[in-house]
Image (cartoon, rainbow, N blue to C red; front, top):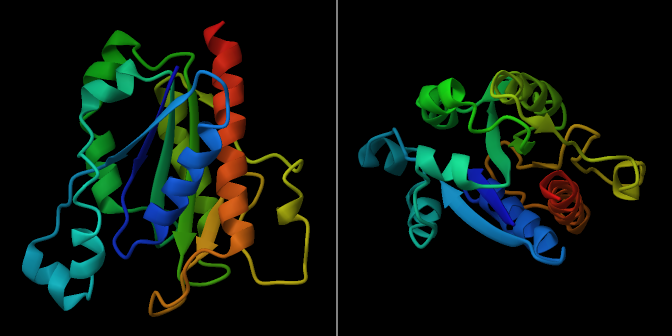
Length: 203
C-alpha cells in the first residue's frame, strides 16, 4: 500500500510536517510512505531575495512528483503553505495539470488529506485545507481529516496549529518558528490515520 505525500515548502515548515506525516503512515502495517515535492515556479533569484534558497537546497534529495504517481498511489496526503487563505501557486499549478487523472477517474475512491502552515495563528489554515478539499472532491477522493481523537488539538495551554481539517503549524511572520512537538504529533497522527483508512479502502 503506497501512501504518497506531496508537498511544497518554501522555508522548510511544510517539509518538516511532511516528514512527520510519513513517520505516522509507516506505523501502519504494509504502508509505504513516499515523499514528493511539487515543482518550483519561482526563479532562483526571486527565491534568493525571499531568503528561501537554503531551505530549497535542503529539499533537493526529495524527488519531484509526477502526475502519474498520484494515480499509482493508494492514498495521497498533500501539504501546502497558506497563501491568502488558499493553497500556494506552486501546488495549484501542479494540480491544474491533473486533468487526465480526472478524465480516467484514476483517483476515485482513494484517500485524500491535507496539511498546511501559515505565518499567523489565524492566517487561513482552515480555509486553505477546506478550499483544497474542493479539488479532491472533483477527483472523487475520500477526504480524511484529523479527528478529535488527536487530543493535541483540544488544549489551550499553548499556541499550536492543528484542527479537525488537518495538521498545521504556525511559522511566524519571519518563518522563525518551526513546528512544535504537538504539531508534529498531529502530523504523525494524520499520517497514521490516513494509512489506516486507506488499508480498509484497499481491502
